[in-house]
Picture 1 (cartoon, rainbow, N blue to C red):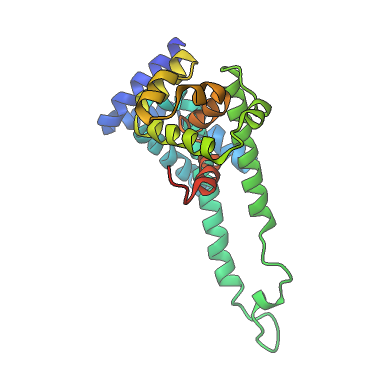
Picture 2 (picture 1 turned 90 degrees about the horizontal axis):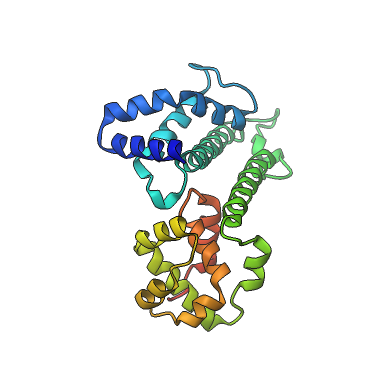
Length: 240
């Protein structure tokens, strides 16, 4: 706990001081290399693998974007590094395909892309699946601290549209008031009274769907970018 508190102090100092940020990045280069190695499934080669530079930039981005509501800093940084590395590899693959698919594949100058049976990039899909699984596993571990499981969330999800909208209204209110997310992390309890008063959602609705709300709020306290993106799509166009 003391180590985590020390890291958070260093991160907040580095937000305002570029030299502090550089020192922090230097101190955590073994961590950055380790996260890059997990992604590449081999040690990165400095000066050769662009992924290491991307990971360093992502670590700096984590410093700039971190707040206590996101939980442990290193977990947040690790997920942001993985997310940026996935974005980089997807971008590189799209660039390579743009070049290679326009290349003549035979004597009749037929573009290579026209000779492919399936345009899907299986390796890209595998990366996304692995990153999604990692996020779900991390979210499951964090929810355990609150006595909540994925099964609990599924069983506790509102069934009526009116109730679903009420819970989402409370979620949007919490997003706009990050001190509520920080209170959730510190106390390990859903701030029902403040959520109800601020969002206008009935207290009994929040209490009835407490486990569902805990999961939603946790998703917005850390680097669960893939899960959050999916959640945004699900909620797209819903008025709250």
